[in-house]
Length: 66
Image (cartoon, rainbow, N blue to C red; front, side):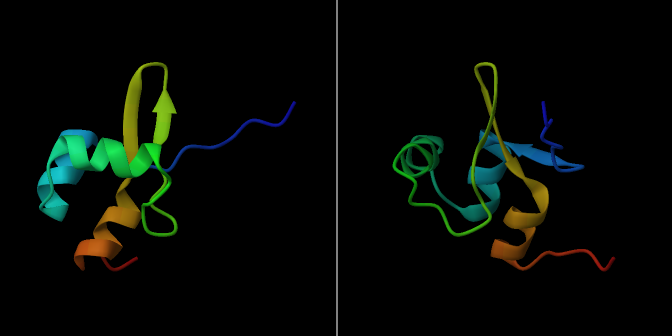
């Protein structure tokens, strides 16, 4: 069985929504309807939803230099 490696860092729904400038409910709704920008897919861990840090940082233009 192949395991999926999670991104090194993720944001909570609250953190991601604040950075993007939208409400938590809108972010949840967009994730449920698969209307998020490419690469920003929500990661479900049990009942918790997380978003890849790199994708959010790219979206808001705060990428750190590698």
